[in-house]
Image 1 (cartoon, rainbow, N blue to C red):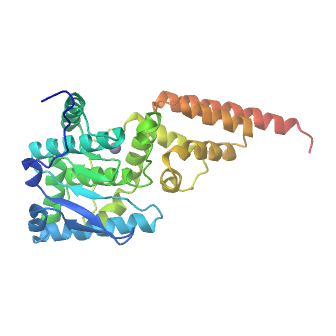
Image 2 (cartoon, rainbow, N blue to C red; image 1 turned 180 degrees about the vertical axis):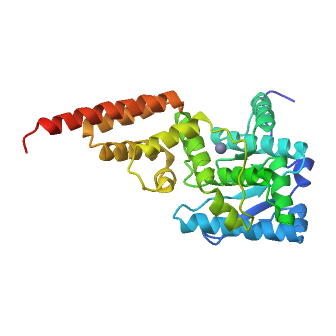
Image 3 (cartoon, rainbow, N blue to C red; image 1 turned 60 degrees about the horizontal axis):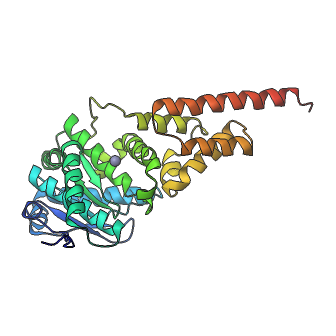
Length: 308
Ligand SMILES: [Zn+2]
């Protein structure tokens, strides 16, 4: 092989052995359609039927809330090999699209190594084109619960992971790759919404009410929750985080925080600039909270001495 040889995306044997679905229909009327034999077989089983019906209902729920999902396909690996292969294929496809040309062997090897590392840690992934892949333990928990209707913390966690990945398919940003400084917002926002929406998601999926246990909130979740709490109480967190492109959320957050705390245009601009340097840590959210408190106190002081 010469150094100019390129690696085409492939569908491995590992991926042929687990269910894959494509999604058809307009937002709010989407259906899962089997994309391989294993998916066709699954939909003949009661658990598989309940699954495709439940997912269609969940997608309808997102659309009804004004934040439709752009889920394009769903892959349910049942083995570590299938999961690993799916992640490698998805990463190669994403990177190829971004590069605008087929990858060189060295680039493909790099992408493969990164995907293998992700396979060891992640519970689910979503590509920029709306392809969702769930980890085998998540798939097993979900399908078992669809088959038995039995509530368990593992099944609740699986539903949370699935909802989290679907949140990534809402208001996707085509430039996400170039705005890695907003990853905290995409990840923290998706996780926060997956938690707050879990009971609704379970009902739409047709699963029993249940709660995950032992969930440790990441810093990015706490940071997003902290920032959202600085905006007007009672306003929709879903509308704020998912009702616009990801890149427009920081400016909207700054506008809402400024409105709530009666800050002027200059402070709003300063807030927006602070979001640019934001790293998603709890400490950086506290810096912003302190800034808001200080400026709000100054604004109140100014108001107090201004004769009416
Ligand atoms: Zn995520």
